[in-house]
Image (cartoon, rainbow, N blue to C red; front, side, top):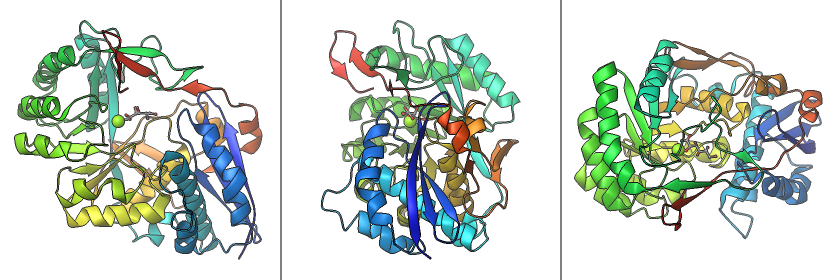
Length: 402
Ligand code: GCO
Ligand code: MG
């Protein structure tokens, strides 16, 4: 079997997605998600100028060797752009492998450990009452786990909360919006918010929260400690992932579970966090973490240390990534939870999906490979539109983490 061609499909059905399609001499093709929100064209350039020419003629079944050709074999390593391209290649090759063997992806990586995967929904409210209403709405849809974000009194912007539209989308058309941040107002409000959520909905519902990399280790320790009585499923990205040692302080102070790493790319970003058991969930998704080949190693490594998966799954990760993640989550033993932010309907005009949501869980059907297809003609009707993630400044103007 040989790779004869590959192409990149850049489309914007409501938001930008990059999809790699790898074609073989046996008529079988595979799809991989290569979307890196706001940096789509950098990944496209790397795929088109280097990866695709290097793939032609290779045997697509050699997933391990091809992964190392693009990672170990390349001198300039790591980084989001490079690893997103490698992830897309790897996903597409596993898709081909499944189709060629006429079996769904989960069968190739261990078979089923479970039939369906628990997902968490998003409740993003403008203020306390709006947030409580949104939680109620998601609970009614059947979700057993809900991430709660809320507008903060006294701050004009809060991460995760839509300003005008009903549908939260992190990227905006054109250059970055500038948002505003005040850590002290946030820290004062959060324990109150979660107290109210627990008071209203009781103890059964799994609650999650994303601090979006904005705290120092000592601030994060305070928050984790003060949220302890509300028994969060996890507190996400309390500090920036660059400072792995910062997690030691949080760990010493609190038993609130920690999830980290949606912006990580390799197992090397996780070594301290995993071997010192400083976190509970790995967030790095297939699309940015080297695809199935690499993430299987990361998940197995984490498993030894009692750490579970909790993959990133916002709307800027395409249906190809989400379907692959469901297969992956069905197969591994140490699955924890999967983020699920449903795509807008228009996305499903372009991507034909094989997964469905029921009673708090997602499952895939038995379509061979990953099981998602792309309608290229429909994709071409939605050309790329420049969109960026916001940037963030403290109230005194200081540039801060978004
Ligand atoms: C999450 C994430 C997202 C990211 C977004 C960036 O936990 O879902 O933090 O909301 O901010 O995916 O592109
Ligand atoms: Mg996050």
